[in-house]
Image 1 (cartoon, rainbow, N blue to C red):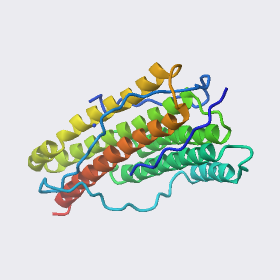
Image 2 (image 1 turned 60 degrees about the horizontal axis):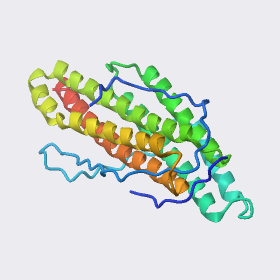
Image 3 (image 1 turned 90 degrees about the vertical axis):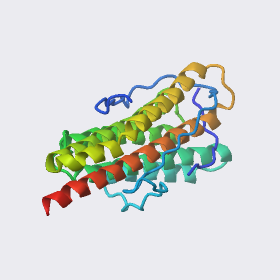
Image 4 (image 1 turned 120 degrees about the vertical axis):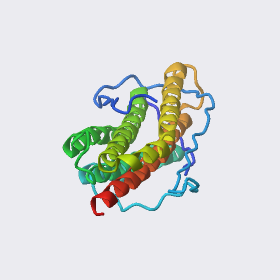
Length: 269
């Protein structure tokens, strides 16, 4: 049987950074009936400003403009879910399905911003094309999630693939941050010492992030057969993964921009 998700309210970090995992989109495990997750600690990431006492508020970013076709695909699936008559789908299940598509679109937006960030520094350890191809593979997983949700075929593979793609976004961003720090060390060796020290906490935060994502995946795999309220927990699990990913990716992108600004200022002196 295929499960229908029920709504969860929207919620507003080491393994080596080079470890990227692309999960197959076309492999589907049997749909689970019920899940039960144990409570997990909420990740809290606080950004620092140049003085080290920032409030963690990140500036608004430009609207995403990459992966246009993928975004259009997800939006079309969202629209299809909204137009389904209540007689064919329960109202709560329809709302939850729409919410999962919204989360898929948000994940695609994160990938788009990472593409833009990668273009800022041509000395990356990974080329922009390689990064874009990798992110496009993750975009395919987000699209598949929207398809599974629209077709009412959400399975364990759907959820674990989505979480794996989110983890990949964070890993790529971590690589980009380290590449920016290397750029500073080449252009301004003395100042790079303080910059590396400033970003030392990222290793801890990335480690905590990976641990939390492991917990989310382990809980799903461990409790798939004996859980209660599976549909509600599907939305909750993906939401928790999204919140953790948004937090650490946003912080690492800000840290990367700070490092690139410092490297550029040295070049124009």
